[in-house]
Image (cartoon, rainbow, N blue to C red; front, side, top):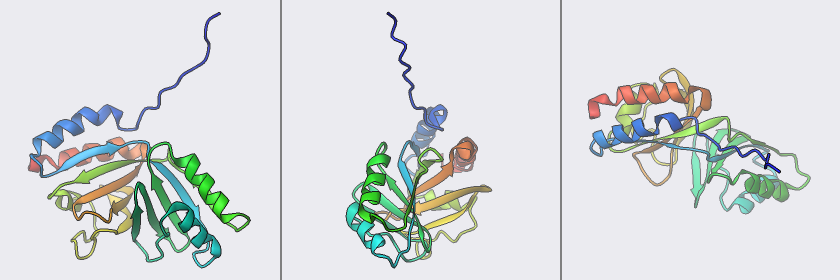
Length: 200
């Protein structure tokens, strides 16, 4: 009897651009590195930051949800991104979304909390290197100078007229995550590659 089980292989939104990104990165001589970070777990979490649930979630995840606007907290392979006074994006390693959601829900018990898996909504583009800020500044109206947008900062903004969540992790001044909706990822990648030509 034939095996009729269907196996599907997940394909990232920028799988078609992987070779172009790698080739461009090589041509930049270390000034800029571009790559997709596909399939990161992404959970939208909403709760009252003053409630016991917020502290319980922090303990369950091993990092406190940031309460200062436009900031990021990182611990191990987890990143919590401030999106609003009662809203965060928790980003983790690929495939971790069920575990993260379970930990959050178990920690909050009967407290009011909203946890939504939005992993398939966006992909993440890594823009790194000494010229990364200059490249992003070509298409973003934010002041990206390290004094204004240093490590541990984030913003919901537009880059090349595309809505993104821009994140600087807390370890580096020249490494950015650009979280972009999957349907716009190809366009944004083309823009980044074109805007980065001067660094090649």
